[in-house]
Length: 289
View 1 (cartoon, helix red, strand yellow):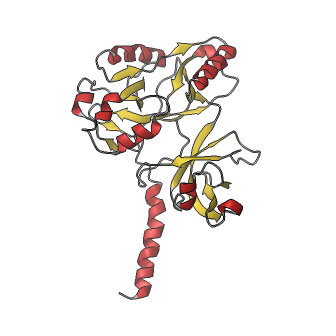
View 2 (cartoon, one colour):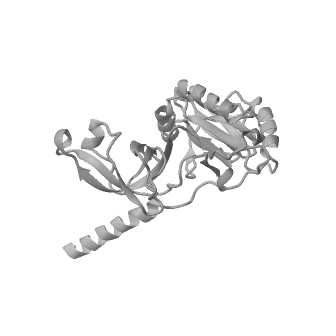
View 3 (tube, helix red, strand yellow):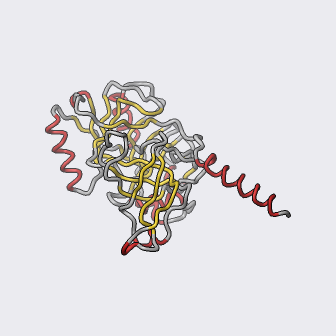
């Protein structure tokens, strides 16, 4: 085959990969907004934000937020209801990598599934206010040993709220979720469910590698990433030596942490967290829940 034809084929594949990576064939879930201090805490239920894998039970199968089927043992879901449930596959705090690998392994026979709990926090098709859905979830949770409702608390002041945040962080938790008691389940980004964390995380696409200097000479110094709105910035911290030697590929989606934004809309103190491990064809670049 002539070289110019090979070049055209490789160029086509290169252009096709980003298109596949931005596919939006995702499950219809609700996504959280950021906390703002004008919130009346008394209007919300408060729960811990778990560091597990988002799971959507469609009445027959467990789906990831990207729509991928998560292979789960039949005994795990034997007592699950037929109605749709939104929740988190979770083992314990700081075990994200374990449950993430398990959810992608397609190994229903793994004994690790005995350690997993489906921590539920919403009923997408219930139709009632969140306070009603909370009551219904309590009944669902008692019918399966592998389903547990995420505890919902009530506070009257922001002082109480931040005290609870301090308690969760001290115990190696991620943060808090606030869900408006009167809110209906709405698909997409909702102002009625917000997250309160000392740090936020988001995703971006790697567009370039930048060589390091000094002790990182010959290795990765930073990556240039692009946000969904097109803004670009560099991330130079958070990488292990192995990741600097073998960095996330151009076109890959990475998760990073940051502390707010600059006046130009660029994440402040961005810190590499991990490579997004969902299959490249079904990635949602909206900020994580």
